[in-house]
Amino acid sequence: MKRNHFLLGAISGVTVAASNDSFFAKALAQPALPGMPGSAGERVLVLLNLVGGNDGLNMIVPHGTPEYYRYRPTIAVPPSDVLTVNEKIGFNPALRSLKALYDRGEVAIVQGSGYPSPDHSHFRSQQIWQTAAPESYESTGWIGRYLDGAALPKENLWNGVAIAEVLPEAMVGRSVDVPALSDVRSYGLRSDRRLDDRNAFTSLLSDQRVPFSSPYLAAVTQIEAHAQRGSEQLPKLIAGYRSTASYPATPLGRSLALAAQIIGSRLGTRVIYVQHGSFDTHSSQKRTQDILLEALSNALVAFYDDLQAHGNDRRVLTMTFSEFGRRVAENASRGTDHGEAGPMLLVGGGVKGGVYGEHPRLDQLDNGDAIYTTDFRSVYTTVVERWLGRAAHGIVGGSFPLIPVRA
Image (tube, rainbow, N blue to C red; front, side, top):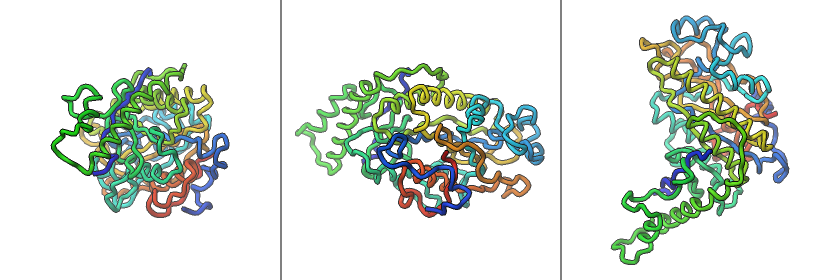
């Protein structure tokens, strides 16, 4: 039994490696010396999971590719609606506010992200993206491994935070406990529902009359103590943070508002996980995805407005990912089915904006799917080495070229 497999609690929003000469190598500059302003020791990574398999072709639209319109006669974004980046691609119009960030040089588009022999199962592909292990089944996540090996104070409960109901696999480590947060007021150890009083669980664990002995009892007790202490600390630690940003009244908006509070309160947090979706658009895709993309765009822009107002925008990098893209051709229900390869976005004041990697060719498909052109582990390697300031060996399996997305 792994200590991090416990669900510690839920906090939801309050009002809240590789060759440096590769085409990826220049964007994330070498980290500054530890302790310096904006150094790796002060930077925060926000992982934004677009759950369900986001259709990248209707997100970053290949308006210059005739095959796109041939394969999608009813759901393609009309060329006149595309927010043009260049003669080949542009943003979905639902991403208008995010396009403004792109125009300021604060959004990098990494095209065609995927991995060899992709899996179309939600469960398995999520597992692959969160453990960075397409060829094996790992018990720890890539961020969990980073947190395990980072020179971080072990007594700090907030080195990593997941703003989610359940701890994502990406954040599971061997030695660092990561709280899963969705509501500040209800944060604490989830135990037997009959034990409504949090103190009742502590009393149960320490009751000498309990008629059993377990080697795991000490770990359970320690985790419970962390959760209890965290539930008492967190509201006080973030209480002084004030935001004037206009966050949308959406789950993602509330999650990012809480993330900004945690970041601005200087709790020593290095990684925050949030999620948005579901993007599993098998039918009536256009309306559903447009709503989700607009919510994504508005929440991200509010988040960076908030960070900028507190002087934090250049020390926070947000990375989007999704377990897979969608098939190139639309289906009979005006949706798309599980596919392969899609864009990842890197957002923040420390990003060298632009377009990276090659867009998958739509005239050369693999059984109806776009073929990936960028291994997602290159993005992870870049983030670990050039943003978080750690060697990627042991965190991201193998050696992968870096991406030049750091200003």
